[in-house]
Each structure stands twice: as structure tokens, then as C-alpha cells.
Image (cartoon, rainbow over all chains, first blue to last red; front, side):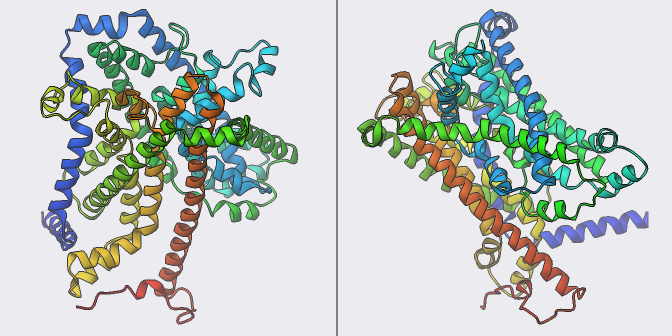
Length: 288
Length: 323
């Protein structure tokens, strides 16, 4: 009992120490007000609009419509493949950036952030310049029988470019924190470098790798600008889910747009939760 | 989501040199991986940037310049600048206020608040645009009331500003919260104890301490504000010369098959991105130097390093206001 009382008193003292600083009420109040105006009112408008529909109507507009369903399939499959490609090459890029020394390393490290800074419309039009049949790589690839621009592979390429920094920037600190002692111990105990990688290094890096994948995947699901240019936007083939929202709005079908919006919103909340769990797992792993 | 990405420069260099022979990768592995990494980066990062520049100038400098001085392009540039000029200060102020409340005080619902601030990173820009249409569109919550008053939000500048506000909402706050938390409030408390007013404390202690992080957040916020496409394309209505921002103007030119002009406008945005990256590197360098200096000062102060009086440690002389 006394202990608990003491602890409570300590907490109170700590709290009071914090409250020496001025401006709590006004800063929290302003934050909540601004948050409410800019984020929460629009968010609730979408939820109210979508939930105001009958279930039948919602199902018809968001699930049963084959064109909408096809757009989910395109979005999911392209984001999944792009996420996998990024997991492999993002891992390699992060490994090379942390472990090796070579000229131009700082430049390589800096340019990884380019997709964060480059407007997505620019990425999109640049990829068209590269992969359209008259483009630098497009003609050559079509000679090999692979049509990239205005087809599904183009969407994958756009999402790969957009998602790359997420994997690299999640993996880099994780690789930096690897303790060289465990690798040395494995080597001294007779493991080959390949065995050390598979049994010692890779298990530690699985949680951050999954986090990076989930971040890239989530970004890929919501991405619009770059895909809009390179996808060609053919109904049933290369329309992505965000584009369907735009199309519904252009037809003044507000309910249809809100229904698809709610489906995507739920998907991104689920991913957000997953990412938070993965990060907690990473922290847990690195602390034990 | 981008808030998770932390600054990682600085350490890796020493790390790699200290590696012992045992845990180094074999030479062929090193060459293969380096080749793959650099090849992938060239294919997905360098080539797209180069292609924009080359196509922009493909029909000569005159076409390039006339694409940028075209009245529609000029009004698009103006609208982009106006939007950024409203959005960046507004979100900077919000970021400062929110970071102060979250990093300096403990209260119920604090982690929920952090999640809510992060929300716009998790939501597709198109959905952000859709939400605004549902609130301010003619058939939305406030749309008809506002249009009775003669205020148009959707298909007009206010809608574009609101969409951009939403999209770039978390940047500054995300940058400042961890920074403020890591610095602690000792200096601020001593300033207050010595008689400083709240504003004096803020302008002489807090703001100087976080200036690089603040600048960093503002740079990212600005880049996104000027380049946003998805959310803005939903609320703008694509009225040429009126509600097209520069990224939307690129789209219009592209759909008109005016490729050289589209690439010319895109190259302007690409230059903005390169400038952003350059500033970001400079600020990161400053941040890591500040962190190193602070760490050294901490070591000197605790007496672990016998170089006392060698150089004046920064942290012992917080410019306390004289009252």
C-alpha cells in the first residue's frame, strides 16, 4: 500500500514538473480544433455517407459491380508484386548501403529518397517516357514480347518506384543495429557465410522486412498519380480502385464513390494496424 | 507513414570499415549485390529523372520556354505557389502547436491523437479528395449553404487548398514530436525559473533548438504541397487557367498529346524535387552534427572525457533571457 502511494506521488510530482511549462490547454485545444476541421469532419462525412446506404445498395456498388471488383484485383495484385520486388531489391540496396564502401555511396543513399520528393505526376509521365512503345526501354521490351506501358506491368513498375524508399529506409537502421559478434561467433563455430546469413542474420531482419513490405504495399494500394499516367486506364483491365472513385464522382454517383472509398479506408486502417503490430514486434525482437 | 522513416546517415561509414574479416561477404557476393543495387537504382530512380529532362528539351529550348511562359502554365504555377504559400505556414503553425502539446505533456488519449495526426499518410489522396467533395460539394454537407452565401469550395481554389492541407497535415508535427521529446524540457524549465515569460522561452530556447527539424518538416511539406496530384485532381474540376495546379497542367498537356510541353512543366517539378533532396541532405547533415555536438557536451559534462575547458560546451550556456 505504502509503495503504491509513493509511486502515485512520484507520478504526480513528475506530472507537476511537466505542467510548469505553459500553454498546455491552448496548444491541445488548437490541435484538436484544427485536427477536427481538416481531418475528422471530412473523414466522418465519408463514413456517414457510406453507412447511410442500405446494405443491399452498398453491396451492389462496392462489391457486386464487376468493373469495381476488377479494379480491386488490379490494385491488390500490382501492389503485392511491387511490394515483393521492393522487398528483394530494397533489402539488397539497404545491405549494400550499410555494409559496403564504394564511390558514389552517399549519392546513392540520397537518391533513394527521390520518390518521396518527386511529384507522382512526374513519376508517371517519366515512366511513360521510358516504357511507351516509342520510349527508351519500351520498344526494346516490346521486341521481347513484353508490353509495359498501358498494361498491368506498367502499374507494377510505377508502384515499385513509389514504394522503394519505404523498404530501404526501414531496413537500413535494422541492418546497422546487427551485432557483428553474433556473425563472428557463427563464423568461428564453422558456419559458412551463407549459413550465417540464413540462420543468424535473416531471422533478425524478418520483422523490419515485413514492416517495409507492408508500408510499400499500403502506399501502393492508395497510389494514384503515377499509375494514372502509365496504366492506360482500360475498363476491367488496368483501372485501379482509386481511379474507380474518380470515375464514379465524374458520373455524380456519390454513393458509389463513398462505398468504394469506405472499402479502401477499411483496408488502409487494417494495414495501419498491421504495421503498428509489426513495429512493436521489431522493437520487442531487438530489445531481447 | 513516411514519419517512420528516420535519419540514417552518418553511422554506416565507420561501421563498414570496422568489420572484421570473418563477417565480411565474399568478394563475388559483394560485387553481385552492389551491381544489383546500383542497377536497380539507376533503372527506377535515375533514368526516370533523366528522361524528363531529355524529353523536356527534345524540341528545343524555345518550345521548352514557351511551354513554361504559356498563360495557362503561368496561372498553374501561380496557383501552385499560392496553395503552398497558404498550406505550408498553416501546417507549420499547427505542427509546432501539436508537437508542443504532445511532446511536452502527458494526457489521456495522447497516443490516439498521434495516430490521428498520422492518418492522412495512411489514406489514399483520392479518398481525401472524395471526403472534401462529400463535405463541400453541391450535394454535400455544407455545399448548398455555402453556395447560398456565394462561396464555392469544390472546383475552386479553397478546395485545392483544403485538399493540400489534409494531405500535408502530418509532415511538420511528425518531424518535431520525436525531436522535442529527445531534447527534454530542462532548458525550458530553467528559463522559466529564471523568470522568462512563455513566449520568451519559446523564441529563445525551444525554437532555436528545433530549427533544423522544423525546416526539414517544412521542406517535405512544401514538396508534397506543390506536387500533390490525386486529391487535388478530384476537387479542382480542371478548369484551365483557373483551377489547374502545375501537376494538373502536366496532365492536361499530356492528354492533349503536347508531350514536349508536358515534360517541360514536369521538369520544373522535378527540379523542385532535386532542390528538396539537396536541402534535405544539408539539414540532415546539420541535425547529425548537432546531435554529435550534444553527445560530446553530455560526455564532457559528466566528466567522462578529460577535456574540460577545451572548447566552450554549448549546452551549459543556454541563452537565458535577461528580464
